[in-house]
Image 1 (cartoon, rainbow, N blue to C red):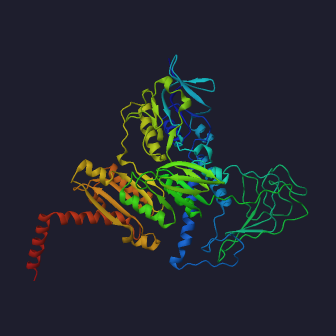
Image 2 (cartoon, rainbow, N blue to C red; image 1 turned 90 degrees about the horizontal axis):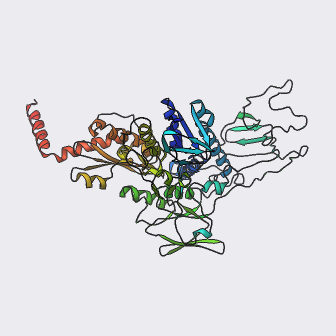
Image 3 (spheres, rainbow, N blue to C red; image 1 turned 180 degrees about the vertical axis):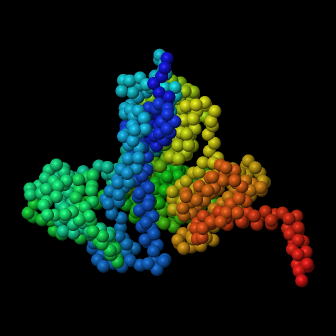
Amino acid sequence: MTVDYDLIIIGGTPAGVYAAVTAAGLNARVALVDPQQGQNSWLAQGTIYTRVLSEMGRKLEQMRDAAQLGIHPQIDDLTEPVMSQTGFPSLPLTEVMEWANLVVANCSEQNSSAILATLGIDLITGEGEFCRLPHLGFVVNNRRLRSRAYLIATGSRPAIPDIKGLQTIDYFTPKDIWHKVLKVGRLKVEGELKVEGELKVGRFKVEGELKVGNENQQPKNQQPDNQQPENQQPENQQPDHLGQKATLREQPWPKGHATRTTSQPSTSQPSTSQPSTSQPSLPKTWVVIGDEPIAPELAQTLARLGCEVTLVVSTTRILFQEDLEASRLIQAQLEAEGIRVLTDSPVDQVREIDGKTWVQAGNKAIEADAILLATGEQPNVESLNLEGVGIKYTQQGLQVNKKLQTTNPRIYSCGKMAGGYPCAHIAQYQASIALKNALFFPCFKVDYHGIPWTILTEPQLARVGLTEVEARKRYGKNVWVIREYFKELDQAQLLGQTTGYMKLVVQRNGTILGATIVGSHATELIGEITLAIQQKIKLGMLANLYYPYPTLSEIFKKTAIQWQHQRISRNQTLKNFLEGFFNLRRSWSK
């Protein structure tokens, strides 16, 4: 009996969409079943908003550190924007979230339903489950879909720890913090909002009317948006898909800070509704609980946005699975920014007393306005009837082999539920392996040795391959460790970002076993070492490359040259030969 598809993908996560697009590019017939269209993507789950707020926090931190470069704020009027203690404007969260929403909209268009359909992918929205009789299939919207193979890419959700009293209080998770606090995606403006006169933000001046609301309601004596009055020409009119109309003129940057001036609203045409102008705000004090890598990321972001943050971990140090030096350096940076870090402090209970939340962590009681849980994730698979088709799973994920087959060999899995770190690029790597096995022959296996792993704190941490501890366990004494520090780079000195280092773990012959980079742009720099590990390029080859000056990438050559010096210093025979050779040459010279 023939089947409907070559591959059915369950889940609209980035890995699921990637697998669908790749399979369609191979002319395979693919169906993508998304239980809630777009709601399982990393964009909808808050990751993009976390990155936006992290970037804004980084910008604010640079402004606060600008005095080190001799740059001081020139303040004309302290009453216009809200000013921070440093003299710089504080972060306008409403405008930032508008920008974040725009970023989400632009990124979402890349994998919109229309684009996926043009690629030949059958996009099906609805909840479904596997069925075994009379044949293996997937039932969605009362329709049985049959395929040669299936790929589960439903993503995961936050795992809530069993802490006494937790269910009696409100708390946040990394996937809903910005949605809950800042009401992301829930802003609604009714009626018509008018701004007459001038509105200056940054370098642009807006003149005329700014309309937000129902564009079908036209006020009296006003032309529709798509028509112009006679004898009137638009001046640099910018089209807007939201029905907004404005004229933009370039203005020079003010010497001090960005200003906003708005004239008094006109009384001739009063607004039918007054939208709320209150700014969303973050709770002042936070307790971030969890050993996951995203915990220090969010703690640092909240601290840079002006919150008082306590980071609580149950292990003896943060980022326990990472290199000891990297972990200590990042913890020191967090503490330098005012974050209180409590290690080896498992949380026993939480209570609410007089409107305040109290957290019992080890032998300390911490008062907070809000709690953020970063305690891991669990798979979204309960509704798929996995037991009915013979798939074994736990709260940590599905049971898969190195080919990413579940205990039902026709069904594959990728993402956090298939093991590994919860990173989008690792999930895509898994999807590529599962895809080749599902569409062709199941002979490809995952190998995470050459897959990088990043943590977006400041400084950034990026790692690929083995750590020093792992390498010494496997290779013993045949392991060399080479370090180079960012402070030795001219570009790092120019940027004022000298914190960090690169650490290479290599064998005596120059084979790169692993690398850890902590510092500015570490997530960008790790790509070159990743290529070297995957293609088995030895460190001596990097010593022969010449990088543009001044750049941070010079750290590769400096590290490779340092390895060459260590080879010479540890080879007594070579040192004796070179000493004799140059003595002989000097004796021949006249």
